[in-house]
Image (cartoon, rainbow, N blue to C red; front, top):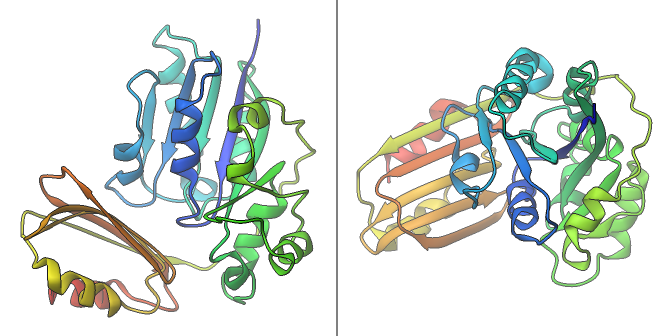
Length: 288
């Protein structure tokens, strides 16, 4: 029996994993892809953003796969394969705080599956600061070291020498700018490297969720976002304003808002628990 190859897409919060998967789904490679999405928080924003109705997408939503999701992950694989629509390749989008090696180890014992590599997406705007951060660096570095392929996102030009040196010092093997390659070709041409199984230490995380039909003043929204708690590293979702609905993404210091057709405000926020509390996030947003 031919085993189904499984590729794990890793990367820290907001690195661009969903964008990479959407690009793969749009490329003409002739393969039927199945996508398993593991999003941090009980509202699956990433699953809502997957732009395809021709692949199977199953959302897992309660946190780090290395700690609590191994059984659910295998159950989801079983559910996927029981549909009778056998995929040619399975993509697993790990949460931004997951250990990709732990995900791989959870699947290696399944005789129906074969390991096809770990891709780690590195945020070109924020990765140097993350690797210089004593609290976050161990986890971010572990995701880079675990990768068979490191792809640098969010860069308009070639990566700088300091950025490449940071990545090399943390075990990146010939990292590539994500816009410089045919993603499907790189994905299916990966030569897997031996895996280790030692988990990296990482900080605890605070997650915050908000859902409402309240309409915010568009002019005040920009000021509100500029005053967000310093420890709120990642926030994403949809916001209703007096000027229409917006799809919102915050990664570190970067804020992006694009018009969309959302009918309610749905937001998920995340940050290291040593730097922000759920109460701080709630108090900040409730004053909008």
